[in-house]
Image (cartoon, rainbow, N blue to C red; front, side, top):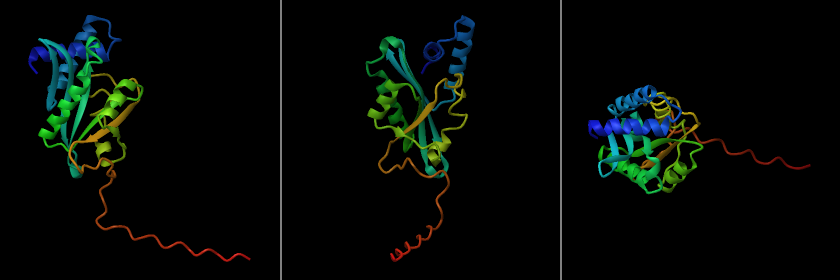
Length: 197
């Protein structure tokens, strides 16, 4: 994204994600915070109609230790007048492809629990709820991923963590603790039933 596009995206995100900001100074500061946050991402994806920014999404590719590499899409944003035209889907699909290109095995995202339209979209695209206690989920639940670290204020609604494998065989529900080096012994067989008197 160009510098001008980043500024346009910052303003768009401020309007969409922070509608309670009414003064031009508040909006300018919030927009600048979004732009600063975008500079720390692996990629900023932009949906243009002509020269006008109509949507955007940020992508971060992370090493998740023993789990491998995963990508995280955040701030999927489409202008009101461009909604219901498939831009959000195309932005997420582009983020998925970019994640694969960067070696990611899964895509992770947060969505407001009460955002039914976005949840339906993600579920239709193959995303499932991710256990926050899994090694993959635990990585993406810290303050770096929720709670305002991305230039926005903390989410006003509860967030749902969702994920989708990007490569065949990627397991999303690995336990939060590393696997044991040797398997646990099998449990003892059940005791025989006691005779009835």
